[in-house]
Amino acid sequence: MEIIRQEYIDKLLRYSKIKDIKIITGLRRSGKTTVLKQFISFIKTNNIATEENILTYDFNNRLLLDKLTWQNFTIGVIQKAKNKNTKIFLIIDEIQELKDWQKSIKTLFENDQINFDIYLTGSNSQTLSTDISTWFSGRHININLLPITFNDLVKYKILNFDKNDFKKYLEFGGLGKIIPFYDDITEMKLLLRNIINDAIFKDVYKRYKIKDKDSFEKTFKYIFDTIGNEISLNNISKLLKVNYRTTKQQIKWMCNANVINEINYYDVKGKRLLKTNSKYYSLDLGIIGSVNGFNKNFGWKLENLVYLDLLKKYEYVYTYKNKNGKQIDFICINDSIITYIQVTKYLVPKNEENSNWDREIGVLASIRDSNRKICICFENETERLDNGIEIINILDWL
Image 1 (cartoon, rainbow, N blue to C red):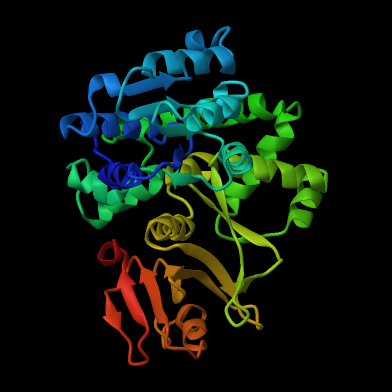
Image 2 (tube, rainbow, N blue to C red):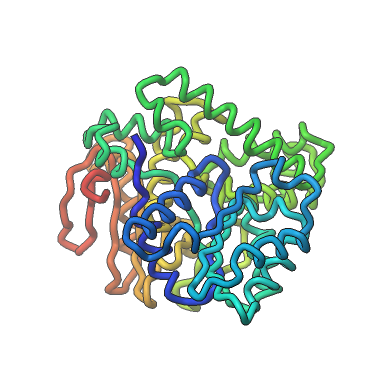
């Protein structure tokens, strides 16, 4: 069963009304190609475009790339599009595989004779965003494709909206390639390992011409073993016996490949980012389990899931630490309005043994402003405390 990614189709449809280049980035196997196909189907079905006004190219196809230069590709596109007196939807998958692709896109974008509406996908966010910014001076829109959500799997009756199936999603995530096998745990584990080995490692090795693969894989595993924790690059390099600059570059490569995201600390009073250590989150939950073990680190995975959800709901997502070193997992900002969010598996009351109340609720209560403060939990029921802090069960949050 195909899951329709309607929120992304709607975004592309809204952006189709402006000339800017639309670029979809995301981890390999996250479903970028599927979203493009669904968008094409939508604009055809709703008579927004006809077959002849849509040009598609798939640069995953090595046969297409053999002996193809940016010049003859550009000429071929123009030849197909000329003599059409309407907008041409130009849709190109994995554009970075074409050498000097930016020269071709600039030529087509600036063509005065043909009205090209350009859509690109790519797996390397840094390369694309850097080149697009350099060549097109802000005339582009970035869309980061995240994995299929728990709610989507419930909507399409692949999972039930209950705690047991939520735990299953927390372990295996939402990469499109594994969804047809959600009833086969062994197959999902195998596919996730293949995605890491083929779609991540091999892709990064090829793109950056990495020779010291062991070093990269050690850093990769370390990052996934410490998801959601503050990371010191100095400590990593010393622990793994890897050069500091190499460690920094390796983590940048992971971010570029849309495997992880860096999250910075935010100074609420100064309204600025702090130049300090960062935290990292995976852009898919299944990769965490595949790297550091399934049925482990429930709290980390829960926090990571909330992070992915926040990326869709808020314009900016940061983290926070007060002067006493106590942390708030996320500070989220929309239109200058701040929301503070803590995440924990179980909020243990003050009067019970091993209480985490002060660590989770106390730090929220210590912030003396009127902004919304939330603690998202797995075990606790949703309620509102007398001081206005909200405790929200994860299923209610979703």
